[in-house]
Length: 326
Image (tube, rainbow, N blue to C red; front, side, top):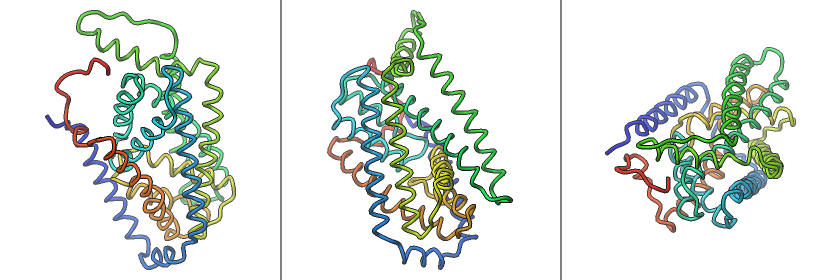
């Protein structure tokens, strides 16, 4: 049976991406975008791709640190699962890659889907709080009267409220209180308990290395964005870069078209035009990232999916029965 909710997310993402792309193309000169793409600095682009690869390696190490608190996990397997999950996020809307990632973790890392989702949720909160901090710091670099200043401040307030609330809920759930359910609620209570196991690191001394790795992850990600912008001849200060990283990262959280088409272009255009660069350069930066950086990751992820016999069709079908290891 089709999962209508996920299909609606897919449709919403396609419509949103197409709509934003149509609006942008009405304001951005295609000829100027072509000129910007024609003079790409491929040396800087290569550095951007290298920094992105380092960020993926660090993200895998951070996730392994969290998983090791539940069950020892081989780094190579963690890396493969993370790459595939991120590739599916690139291919499909609504963060469906997290579901694939949790399913792969269950089959290859010997833990339940709910435990994996708990650690994934924790990682997302760490990243979200970091992005909020970067955006909050970077907004201070906006020049007086910047076109998007009010919008970005609203985005910051919403992001602070959202991630702050989720972080507080996760911290409460990571406590030692117990829930007892019998009858038909028992399977649900079991899954909820397993999900909470994935959040235990919040109260563990082992959280320190996860926080350190989060800083390193975003240093590598920020460096990747800096080199990417350098490739299209956009040079930002550190504070301006932080705002750009924050805006671009938040744009990837909403349901989007495959490849973040539309929302990704909009985020880069808002960021670079805020600091006096052209819309064409922002559009070119987003497109270059989608083709060379995210595109390369996607190709590798698809290859790994084929090797591991991962199919995406089941994501849009409701499961007939509950899995006892969920």
